[in-house]
Length: 448
Ligand code: PA5
Image (cartoon, rainbow, N blue to C red; front, side):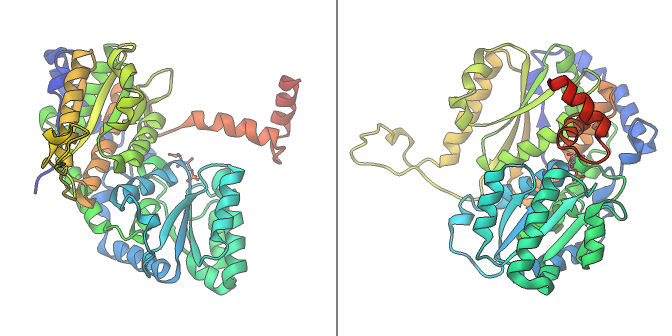
């Protein structure tokens, strides 16, 4: 079976080949630091060998729980935010029919809806209204068990589920994914007797997609979690290679760090396959929270091409030359569709007649790469043989491993996120949360 591959050829006009090769010993050191657990954030390295440590029994438990939800729910609401949300959404959207929610409902195939990732009153009001006549279940995902966005959504959903379906059924169709001991989500799950899964202490939110945080909702959506884990396992092996050029994660980490040194402060992750939109969102969180600290870090952004060539294309082609692109390119689509011929050819499109739509897409991709490189944008390309669970698993592990190495190369702790607390402190102070009296006073004085 093929693997995903990384091509950095179109970067070499922008960075010195020797300088890139000189990363080999540094990258090796970072990999050893990760393996030995001697670096910053070493209590959060549970993701490093997670794929190969997942047992058949664990996957069977997840699948059995998913089956209970699939059998008893028309809709399953997945409540979570950040690392407790994006990985599941990334995989589910990548693997789902683009129009799934508009298609006729099939028994045993619940619609997956996400909540707890915003505090939009309209969103929540419309969600609860939509759920009014639905047999729905909830997966409540929060490692801390205290995240406000998720907790508000869960409080609403729990009550509605109990009111609509009765306490006994609610107990069957509400599942918690949280810490083993700490937090309100754990207290509630234990008190109510919900089926629950533990998020390991040593796996941080943004590295948790291959724990029940991601695997349970993904299994409920009917996506093959065994294949996802198998792909990640394969990448775990590939990315253990200490040779820079043989290890795509190491090469990616080294290349982006060298580009950063050369003034390329923004990385744009690009797809030409709209189903990967949320995969890019997952990646942004992974790299943004891991590297953006101590006044450093590449700013991770993303675009969906060719859609965004008609919005961001101008900026990318001719704006400030502080960007580089990493294209995630899917080699083979899952469907085949040809451009039809038209006798009248009023639209002048007969030069494409008979061609696969993907051939046009691939030429858009190649044309864009050439134009952007000509315009001064270094281009990395990750080639993905097909959009399926196995290769998504590979991509997930590849990006995680590269992120760990890259953070260490940058000289930051890639596994903490102290900056995320600042807004929470202010919000709690403004809302007069017990325990925040001092902060409340200080913030009220500032606002006078
Ligand atoms: O990556 C992270 O650590 C964060 O994005 C968290 O996942 C996010 O804040 C949600 O936290 P929790 O799972 O504790 O609700």
